Amino acid sequence: QVQVVESGGGLVQPGGSLRLSCAASGSIFSINAMGWYRQVPGKQRELVAAIISGGRTNYADSVKGRFAISRDNAKNTVYLQMNSLKPEDTAVYYCNAGGLTQTRTLWSNWGQGTQVTVSS
Image 1 (cartoon, helix red, strand yellow):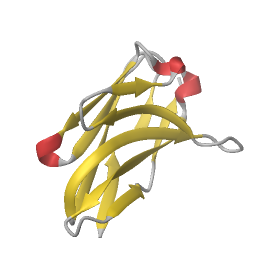
Image 2 (cartoon, helix red, strand yellow; image 1 turned 120 degrees about the horizontal axis):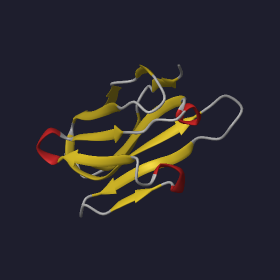
Image 3 (spheres, helix red, strand yellow; image 1 turned 60 degrees about the vertical axis):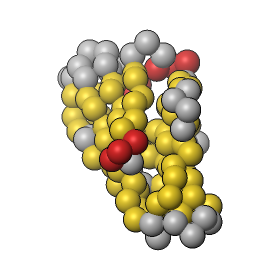
Image 4 (cartoon, one colour; image 1 turned 90 degrees about the vertical axis):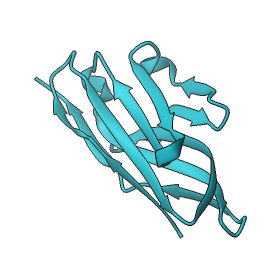
């Protein structure tokens, strides 16, 4: 079993910053990719940023230059540093991670989500 838990959401004013964290724990042999998605009511969940095991990153166009994803492999944790936040960044942010368990089976799990609200 592998668990994925996010933290770090909250209320911030436009132009402010937040850092989200996502930790994977359990029977982990390897993590191939970790990513952040977001969803607002009535819309599909969208990719915000992702990082794969080689360190390559991918960002949605709407957050390029403002958000930065990073990973601490020793802690099985991924971070999303969000700067210059805009009201349109308001959403529930979800972490997704995937890899192999100790028994070499594939796993891919979502976290429970964390609310980010950008408002004055």
